[in-house]
Image 1 (cartoon, rainbow, N blue to C red):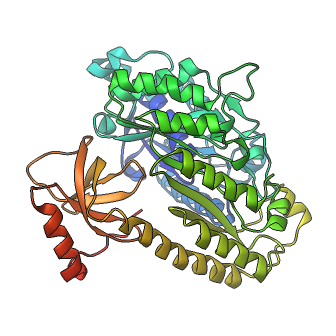
Image 2 (image 1 turned 90 degrees about the vertical axis):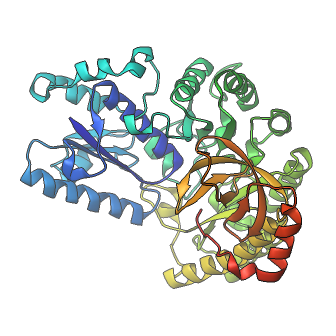
Image 3 (image 1 turned 30 degrees about the vertical axis):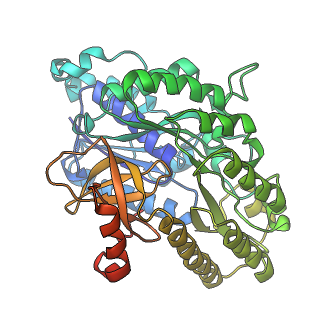
Length: 470
């Protein structure tokens, strides 16, 4: 049988989709790129904003159209639309769905398929014939066949759920309280990915810095990074990242660990969400603007050449023009490497939806978002320009439109040309010869390339188009 799996939303959803794919692969099923060819069709859903929820339902109804033509097709829904609650309401709204899977839990699909094993003729014999499956152990992640040796970067959840409950956030209700995975389980996950060719792992948590806080006398994230770093050295994993952090839980111990371990990248994602203390209080974030400002200073003082990313919500209920401009000026001041921007969207059952009025018009939200987006592009262009003429280490992910594409330790996107070598999955030393706000162009260094690149930039910068891919 063939399966089609479409994942929407955050990196945790990507990891959850990988977990489901692994279980389907272990049963002998094969991935297909189109739902029309699939026996099993799954949407892994996101509901962080209404638009995401609407998109998920639209896709499920497209699957239902295929199911009406081919009744034996199986439709599954996974993720935050199902949540950790009872799926009765969703089942009533979409009775054509066969399987409902909460976030990070593929078991309902496994049980459904197992109950119909004879009817569906699960291809276990074919699975056993594939050599790399001989080493699969309980708890291992088995990548789809087309990703074995091809997937360069993968996500590894380390703590599920969230217990912080920001006033705008639906995640705690949908994903449940935070639950840390054991160190052994995480390391086994990393090792299984490494055996299949993965070169970079990103440790995930809704608040990743709270790893181990739910375990009495348990390890913290810094401790975990040291163990994963040792496993990376032993297995050939080149890079380790982690996200997303929270300002309240980022300790000096963690920052010093990042600075000390060579395979942990100097890349921190720590959302501020707003640049006004009153708005932050309404959001229930638990820190002030000045505390966030001092955190950025600490990060930069302890981690050389660090890149810092943040998240911003514009148009939160009651946000005035002056409060928005405080956010604008904070970003202008801090000059962070990237800002993920979102317009506020009320979600059912959240504190903000129950107690606050969504009173900022949508066109005003769009204007504010665009203002920050334009300013942040200038900041990013300025930051990237500092790499001009430098040689950077690039982990190459793929070939894209005739060029190799990869990322620096700071997660900067770099493109370079070379037709003589297959660079996929390898580390390349690349000289930066052009920079833009979203990407950099480079080339493999030659003896006199530094002088030539500077002349090129000075004389004909326009010849190298910016590849604005993120």
